[in-house]
Picture 1: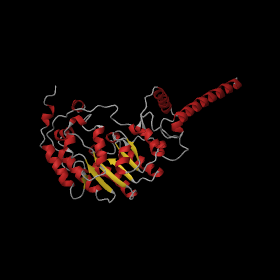
Picture 2: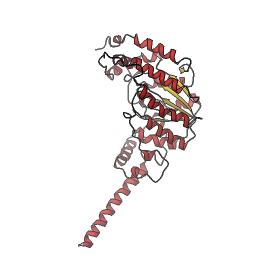
Picture 3: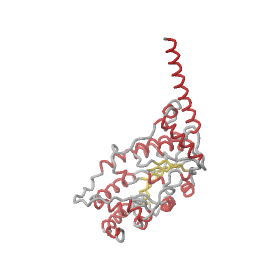
Picture 4: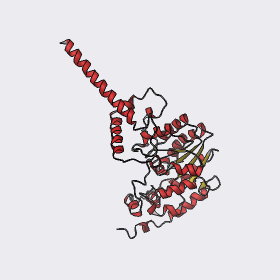
Length: 349
């Protein structure tokens, strides 16, 4: 009886080992997160930014890193290659948190000589507390330790994703590396869609004080400032995305306009104190922010806009300096507080 039980137990263990070995073999062969291989530049399956970006940071040849939330995803690295005469990799995380960006930046700097970081410093993430921000990057992908790969090799979810990649490639549902995670292929941009994607809040009677977001902003800036001090020879170009006029409608109705402009000034002044920082401000691009045909909702812009922004980032037209930032932001504030927001909905069903 004992011998039969021993055979059964050994057989079970052998079966489990075989299944785990098969799982690992499939994952290694397909490698959906590019842990052991570089992605095909012409035909790849893109589906998970937090997991697949680690492979991009490891495998690509670059000296410039484009980072940011989903707003930064609608850029193509080749644009920056052309306008900055560089080699660029994109590392974007939807609704990303500053600690996630720190983890990705640290990994990029471990594996490459990073000379420039272009970062989408969106107002929404400046005023979001660390506790509310996601911190979801799988640590085993963002390090150089080859001995902690078991969560990747022996993972049911990764195996499912590997099989998904096989299916999608067989069906020809692939994209080039330059098109990874861009919005243009899946999202349309128009005033109708922008309004449909915007939930207009009820008007509030209370107005937040100007310093309402300072504590949260300083907590986030403390993370960013570690980047600047730890990488003094790296140029950091921060940019404020062109949030549409609907965003300012939201701020007005929530009583947050003054607090938002105060925090933008606060962050700008703090960052411009560093010699390796430039700030490009597209919030003040009135032609863009008032043309809702550029938007999928109240903040996400079309590729035709991000292309123009990538070109402009190499210039000085939208550059904020210690001498001009207050005047530029004050002019925008004057514009948005006097804007006729009700006219946006005129003629709408």
